[in-house]
Length: 318
Length: 271
View (cartoon, each protein chain N blue to C red):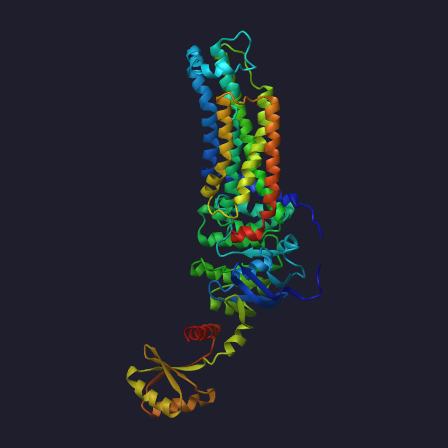
């Protein structure tokens, strides 16, 4: 049943089709103990299907899925007992109170009554739900419902967390709180996490590794820094007077740099080596350009993602 | 590897579903109003007509000419015959509508309603097997249907005995025919209604849609009502035992088919 791998989640050449549609296409990736894997991609890229395959809710059409060393379809109940799932739409029962929601999950996971009461107490305090615990959930705000869903997910102390766009429906403050909690779960509590998200900054903050999916297939896998490093997006951002743009263009042309206007008196120069920055600034000043600010833009995961999909769009157009 | 049924999880889901039913007007209204209309209004109407039994007998003359209700006292008048015929036989098939309707509405809320509310996927990610989910989803509608049927039967018995007294007849409820109907046939009818809903649950999108489709089960019951009214088929113990056997067999067959189709992947994809 179990194998010797240290991977909590392992997908090998996994394909899942729905009729003629291939939702996940030959996907291979893994998550080690305590790792945080981000799944990125457009709607329909296969992120949610991948999470469902890991949880054993869906079976792979071909390939192998192993979670805790087990087949999550054959040993679904055992896998899911150690797995917590959070969905974009919190799966909380609106007709029940917060306490009833938590008590239900405790019974579902077979927690002893004493242990359940202890965990509920801990979690409602952590998630600031204690003063509204006996209110029906249909009177909760979206943020409170998501916090309750998080508390439900963590009640049985799962080792693996599957998070499907956990901040998608939240306002910025609530989303920030949820992100902090996920970061804490990953770092302080060493949970293994697979998170699907559209938020590239969130992915860069939370994930050890990121898998980018396109039409079900894996097109990139690496740490956020590795992926960002694949983009030639480093640029030199200059804050200048609008009247000086032509001089900047002339200086840049002499050095074969390209100029990207950014608006609001700013331009980005591409192709400038880090060691060439002082000489360039001197040349601009000598040419009469008033330089108000200089900053080196580092490429980010967002740059990588946009470049990847820009290339895809160009290929499609061609 | 064979793993035993996690009864704690089944009880947890069924208990939660029962609580959700109690808090849903969309479910409570039909399961209270329909039995009240079907089973309480007809005998109450007879009570209102208590002064005119012969007029009633005249109305039912074609039926009374062919059928003599076995339970009517030998010395009773045609008017009393008519009352016994209505209370004991003609209204009887209406009793089968109650468990079918209650089970169907509750099962629709329990399975399709769960999807509509967005909580189904959370449940599918829980540490349960498909079989445990299936059992849990059958348990609540079945229990609710049986309890509502028993409560309706109790109320009907009180009112029917009152009507019988008003027409100068002895109380006749409970009796063997009705006991067999309530204890043996009605739960089987509930089984047919709820397994049908569970069977279609993966394909329908809304609670209303599921309730409407399951309404098809009512058609044969309407046939039984017509058979009673026309005197073609009067309920007796042997007939009810046989009818119960047929319904239980149908329930088991539907359940065997439904349990194979009640799988996570079908529920989540709607295929």
